[in-house]
Image 1 (cartoon, helix red, strand yellow):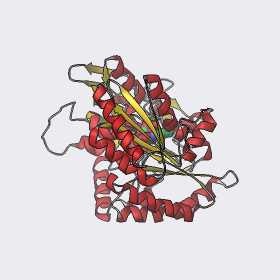
Image 2: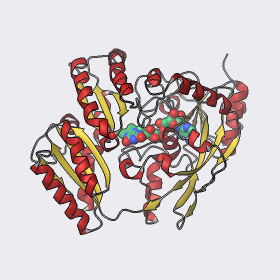
Image 3: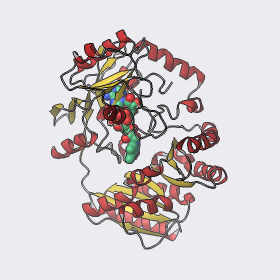
Image 4: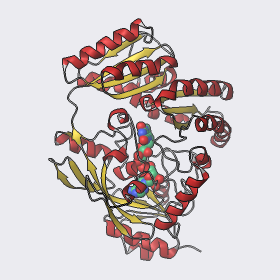
Length: 460
Ligand SMILES: Cc1cc2nc3c(=O)[nH]c(=O)nc-3n(C[C@H](O)[C@H](O)[C@H](O)COP(=O)(O)OP(=O)(O)OC[C@H]3O[C@@H](n4cnc5c(N)ncnc54)[C@H](O)[C@@H]3O)c2cc1C
């Protein structure tokens, strides 16, 4: 029986409910390639009250909701495959309030992440959560996935910057959580339950975000390294002297894909199997001198083969491109992605073991390594050969993932460091969370979403 959407339309402004085929395909999916896309309609509320009305309508009509941000997610969290209503936050994109002295802004959840970064910059402040998709992702989506990115080593995850949230729960209640407070010792902090909840508890409609002082002179070093074993000694050598703002790594295959797609020249004269990119705030000559001294020591110890250092902001941005363009440069291969992490001190051993598994299990596939290695976070991307169908490719990769996850479990790592569980990692959640924890998660979901309408089938 088809559902009459007329009563839903009356809850929204005109032109804010779409049902045409192109819109259903466009708004019904994220960056994943593995799932059918079949939402019933796309709703674009403009206020928290409209979101509340839509959620209540869905509860009455037993329609499931998929909250949708910038749809840059990599785990299928924003995919609507089963006649769900997609609630897109695109029209809730206003910055509502700003307090420069308190370094705090209040905005709707559909504001694009880069807009927040730009707004902070225009006001001589800094929003440090950063990654390659911030030009499209929304702050609400970042909060729902607790996004990380390239500056976590110094500035932490999205969670560390959320001072308040307004949410509409699955039962249609509006909650204002923590209200921008720095201190608030009044029991359970539900704000933190919603951060990383992947749209399964409710819809985030507004947020208060903390900002910080701008770094003065971000300087980038790109280093060629002989093997994976050099990664951590280099990090330790630098971290003992300087607070790095980023420590990233990528393989020669990753670099070659970026150079091919973007027609970029090699960044260094020396070719190497792996590269790492460091960033520091060289606001004084002393910091730069320290960095040079560590560089030379690492060179003498054979940990490095070559390196380049940025001399200007433009050069720093140009060096970053070799790292930031990787995801986009391999996207046409429909890669099978693993976003895994262990604590940084275990990363060398873990990388060694994953390398063995990958070489023996994926001999015929091209593998691209990169990641936020300073946080212990590795992105392992298996590229689909053109001749293989998406389904066959995924099922072959699905057979290998448990071997990596088994090792992760033994090393007390995680199957998802920052991309979330969504649909893609849901079958493997038990490698990172115990049965008791999963039962508690289900119980928590029931409290906030008693009708099971919020992103059902995702995460748990
Ligand atoms: C090129 C590229 C690079 C990336 N690099 C990184 C990286 O370095 N670090 C990182 O952490 N991620 C990275 N990502 C993944 C992605 O950008 C993040 O997960 C991002 O936070 C998703 O935000 P979004 O607005 O696109 O959310 P969506 O993809 O739209 O949604 C993600 C999840 O959040 C839920 N959701 C969205 N909005 C709301 C809301 N308002 N209320 C409740 N639930 C909501 C959705 O239902 C879904 O479950 C990358 C992605 C790409 C394409």
